[in-house]
Image 1 (tube, rainbow, N blue to C red):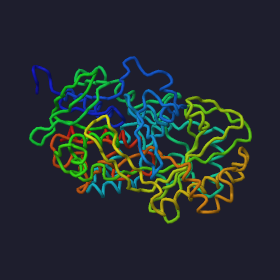
Image 2 (image 1 turned 45 degrees about the vertical axis):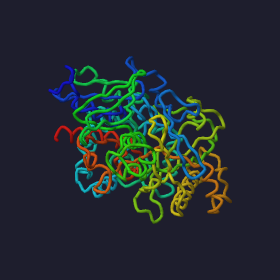
Image 3 (image 1 turned 180 degrees about the vertical axis):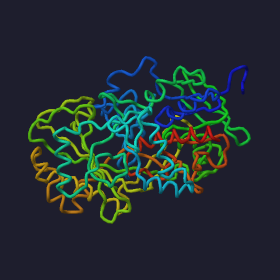
Image 4 (image 1 turned 120 degrees about the vertical axis):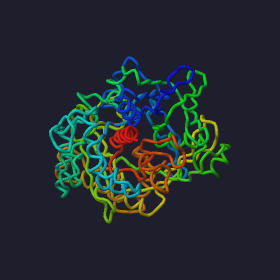
Length: 515
């Protein structure tokens, strides 16, 4: 047992209580001889979350006025297009403030990551037992594809909502396949959206993993504790420097695992002297390890909303704001199902306003995104001061292929609205008008004004021999330091990454316990 001044030094110190961090800390603490400390910059509610934070019909991260649990990271979607990228800053991280979308990555994603990492532990057959172990599928618990006793409940709500039914009928009218279980690796098509919800309540990673682990004597969870840098001795990570309640201290640890998210992990590594040496020197940071891949690029999914107007007031959604989703292949696309049309059953004004109101005549939206594997942009740290945010550039719309795929995705959504099946519940599409839809340059301009992002950032600390970490998340050249969150994925998955983030925590725990 390692101690310092009579105090037990944690075997593993986990930075960040998001999807991966919560899973990692809980799984490690199942071993009574492994002492774990989990530190989170945001609050760790000791008396539970308030009701508004758990209502799965709400999306706190979409609130226009901001939310106490959200940190906006300043970014540029493309030159001269500023954007605030919301991320959870609370126990559960972004699983507390996101939309509750919980779809597994595709088999092709795992094959691609295994190839880049040069390690079959990332192949789909190897990760499937972990995917099953992390979930309780409330709709099909006996399926060999699913788990029945894991910490995360998975449910597909609103399958009988009239707008969701019309959407699925419209997609089939256009010749798209049915995909009733989007977590079963069938051919891409239209189907209900799996969510991490139970009885209409969001079950974030903190609730899922730590509710039953909080009493363990070998697990310590500290909220309001901001990690400023990793501390190294003789080239090995030995702890972290933190600020908490106006005080600064160093927390020693046998091993440090950074789970601060695709923005936070890369930024923390830079602040700790790990990253491109020239960039760090320009920022006034002493270089500990020259790793050019840290922050060199990122991967995310550009998104735009296509609104449609119901003919009559639709019923309020139950259990989630999400309806169905259609995944279809782009023309000449390198991956099947790389375009996504995600159905919102609440108006965008309700999502941004933090309400569940469904008013007469107010449009609903399809959130249309391009999920083709793409790596571009960058995260650059510009100051040694941790309070100064990094410069984040998505580099959207930079190439002709980016613009072509977005046009194709918007036109696919417009085609859904134009079907006979959807015309039963919807007025004809009024924006974009046919003249804009039919003209590439006009549609590019329409998209440019409305472009956002899916909040699926990955790839800032990529794994692989030429990346920053190996297949186990171990940072190249720095013993005692690992990264375990979506930053290690070289490219974002073809579906949203929340379920994959939890999986990364599970895989990291297995790796640490097996050494």
